[in-house]
Amino acid sequence: MIKSMTAYGRGEHRDGDILFTVELKSLNNRYRDIVLRVPKNFQFLEEEIRASVSSRIRRGRVEVLIQKETTGGECPYNPELNLPLAGSYFKIFNQLKEKFGLEQEIRIETLCQMRDVILFKPEEIDQEKIRLGFREVMGAALDSLDMMRSREGDAIEADLTKRLNLLEQYVNEIEEQTSGLVEEYMTRLKDNINRMLKDVAIDESRIVQEAALFAEKSDITEEIVRIRSHLNQFRRYLSLDDSLGRRLDFLIQEINREVNTLGSKTSDSSISIIVVEMKAELEKLREQIQNVE
Image (cartoon, rainbow, N blue to C red; front, side):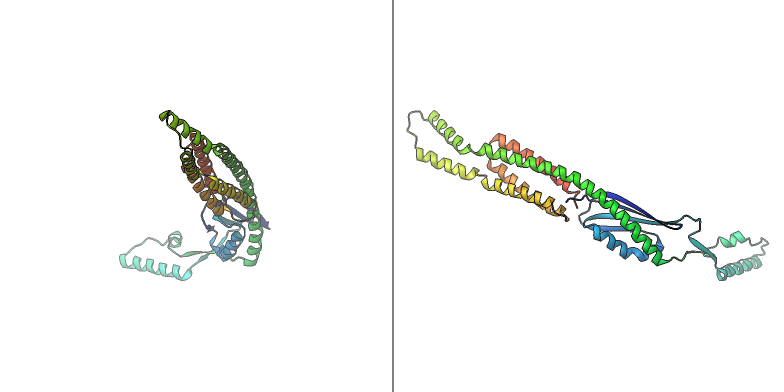
């Protein structure tokens, strides 16, 4: 079963006045690459996040965005006054006033704007409660992502199957057109000799020898058998529930190699046209496979 590497998933979970949200976006990548974008106080979840994604995604770049909102209106930070530092600033201001004879009063807002006078500490969180909420929403987001990956995968599989059938049809056409190629070559050779040497006896054994050499050079039976074998292997892979992209890409390379050899062995123009069409279909297959996990 094919799955696409390109998809989007989202999940939500509410626990009282806390809303957990997870967004997942997966993209094409040769390897598995997990990128996390989580709040600072959620960093204790990173290992579990990676494990959850890895259990469902074998290949591709996955971007994970996790958010927690409190709908009750509470501030997620607890501002605190740094009294020792504020006292130090106040002492410095007074020293400046005495040193330079300044009469300007020290304003509270001026003092509060000094660095680190007011500290914003993140609220303390219940890690176990957060972990349970995260598991719920992460599962929903992964299910959503997986559903889209499977739906996209079905469309890709249908397109791949159509192109495999077309390639097999081209192979059948080539095999049919080459079935009488040696006999045609012998007839053409005889006609050419008769035309050039009208009154000279033809050495039949020599013609048979030439035809045998031609048959050996132009025999594409091995290439036809291999292409059909690769196409059947391709279809078997499509039924597997596994990461298939790399294996399918390798098969495309093998089929392309046999098609190139087949094209170099045949001088018939109609077969050359079919070979070009096969290469075009293989390129389309290769482009589709770049989206397969």
